Amino acid sequence: MFKKDKIVGAALLGYGGIAQGWHKDRIREVDGIELVGVYDIKPERMSAAQADGLNTYSSRAAMLADENVDLVIVATPNHVHKELVIDALNSGKNVICEKPVALSSEDLEDMIAAAKKNDRLFTVHQNRRWDQDYLILKEIIKNNSLGRIFNIESRVQGSHGNPGDWRNHKQFGGGMVFDWGVHMLDQALMLMEDSKLLSVYATLTYITTDDCDDGFRATLTFDNDINFYVEVTTSNFIELPRWYMLGLNGSAVITDWDNHGKIVKVTDWENREAVPVQAGAGLTKTMAPRRDDTIAEEPLPYVPRHWNAYYENLVAYFNGKEDIAVTHDQLRRSTKLIEAIFESARTNEVVKFN
Ligand SMILES: NC(=O)c1ccc[n+]([C@@H]2O[C@H](COP(=O)([O-])OP(=O)(O)OC[C@H]3O[C@@H](n4cnc5c(N)ncnc54)[C@H](O)[C@@H]3O)[C@@H](O)[C@H]2O)c1
Image (cartoon, rainbow, N blue to C red):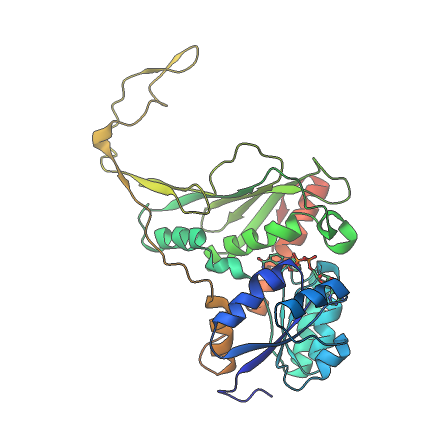
């Protein structure tokens, strides 16, 4: 069992893009945790770890036998998460799994059962809960700046199709629902944490692929009357805003990762006089722009960048100071939503939740 105030010994299982480009640096920057070693099945990735000055193990078993390893971070392709997580838990290690935690609710339950049986931490790297754009949107909701919110749209759009690696194959847990979708659906569910998810309707895209999706569009309805639209697409050469939110008293837009955007509030709702404008082959008052003296533009609230928060929470958890941020029940909820998205796309029907 972990002794409080000891440095958490972390080991990376898989040393690909996210392990080398993210976990390594976050762990180096956070006090109370250190990277004690790496194991990857590819020799070239072991060489990369050595070139980064890291200790490497000769096998997964050697990593799991090392008493200095308190925590294993599973950062491999999606289809082997379950096997590797359960093996590490059964070896007495605490585990962070990369997202998507599992490819089905059944697999997730097996992983949670292994964590319970071994009395070890099992959590998931839902790092995009600390994205600034998401936290800005959350702040606007918290401040009640827009009045009652009735619509939120969350989009990530690329123009390169699926990456041409394992992400392009269903058997490896590929596709954009399991890739970007997992983050965005987690964000949606966390924003709507206190509300019940009533239904989802989703379509998948196969524009550049045929084995697994290369995008999806999902409309989620909650019992708070918020319509939540989530879109991940990979064949867009013109992008729509990252976030678009509507409330009774105003609208907010966050256009990009650099958090450009604005809030526009109505200052005089009753003053709705509008001069008709030409709209195509006709005139409209309904769709005419609002008069400047009835609206006011505001900048987005500032939220500082805090990329190390995930690992800081982890260290605080190990030292009995905080609850773990990413919980089993949250993972159950998002995994069920993902299953419902596939089901809705397959049947072309709305899936309702009990
Ligand atoms: N949270 C995030 O922001 C984020 C970002 C990117 C990727 N990810 C997730 O991280 C995981 C890895 O993604 P990636 O982009 O780093 O992929 P990658 O292909 O770049 O790296 C995966 C590595 O795992 C190794 N590997 C495969 N099977 C293994 C095994 N049985 N034992 C040890 N090593 C093994 C491969 O050799 C490879 O080096 C995926 O689950 C992905 O969804 C998360």
